[in-house]
Length: 350
Image (cartoon, rainbow, N blue to C red; front, side, top):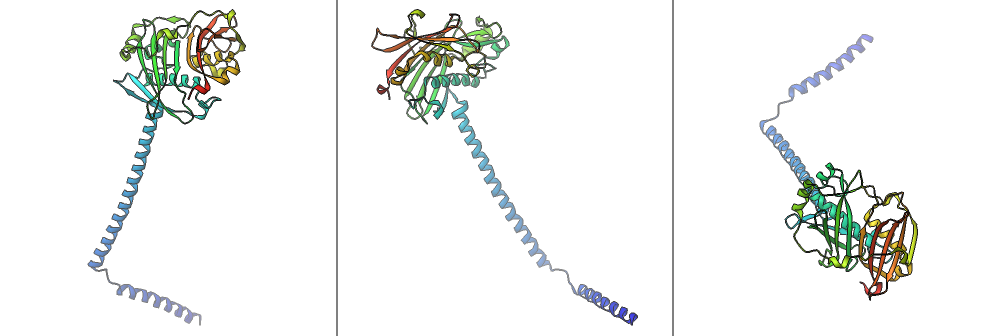
């Protein structure tokens, strides 16, 4: 029985195998037409896939191209700025942010002065003359020279407010043998209205000795081709300051100590911080009712974190203009800076 069962199992296996062999023998190769149809279907499928890939690729390239163009547009408009007038006038766009405003909902004088400095530095960069420090050229850096601001005069016709788009333009003009003059205008980007005019004088100082330096010939060759031969924006006489006697000053603020974040990369108090410290001795009641529209500052000495300063202010009662004179003294009595500010009642300004 076991033998028969085995035979039966083998027989079934054989029958199954035989059936498979019979089916295999009965199978005929596909016709030429079928093969051509199959090939056409594969080709069509490949074309559709390739088209899909091409469309997707084109979309991706267009997206990247658009993003790149948007990035360039933003960079040109709000970071690097652009060069005009044979490469000697530089302009840069800004938007007034919430942190640029003061208590009266307008940009502060310090904000505007910071924008002037930023635009001037980017002008140096656009010319390929920015090596290090605040505007130091390659030849200056090779000789350990840095710029120091000697004098600045800023006149504000109208303060921009939050989200206003403005354009700052800057250029260089000749200014004596050992000075460089930088001038600016700030305009409304939409209608071109001039909001602010400013003029300044810069000198050179040795970074190591901290002493003033004459202009090396090599530095002069770098800068002079960038000069524009035009009259100054502001009358020189309007920025002249009288001699000030600290004993005659009316208001005093003592113990002003520069903080670390008041220093710039040249390791001294930034010029804009001097203005803020000068205004510390202006009475708050006057600040609440007036806004400054004209600032002139002469910088006499640099100061750092270890200096203790005094701010002195007096009002000029001899004219119809509300103006103040300012002195910034070190603790030892040396004049660090002196200045004049002109003011207008807030209700009289836009």
